[in-house]
Structures are given as C-alpha cells and as structure tokens.
Image (cartoon, rainbow, N blue to C red; front, top):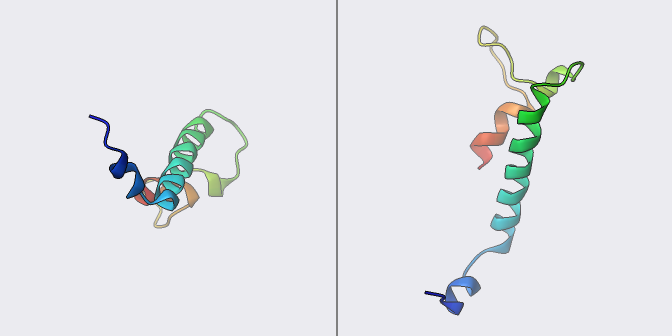
Length: 61
C-alpha cells in the first residue's frame, strides 16, 4: 500500500543523516584494505583504551 500521508511525516534531516552514516560505514570498511591510512581513520587495537572516528560511525546509525 502506498500511503501519501506517511511520506509527509518523515523528517528529512534524519534521512540525510542516516544516508551520510551509511556512506561513511562503507567508506571506513574500505579503509581496512588500504596501507598508510592515518591512525585516526582505523580501529584501535583491542588492548588500547580509546576511540577513533571509525568507532563512532556505527553508534551514530
């Protein structure tokens, strides 16, 4: 069923934010196979206490 009033109640900013986050998820997953990427664009090792930009992507979704 296609309900036109359902589309009117969507918040565009949330849809845009989620789209950016999904794009970023794909981007950071592709970084795993690239050499010489700056450390702030990688996951930290499990024995390190900290977070990087990459660690914030999934919770944002």
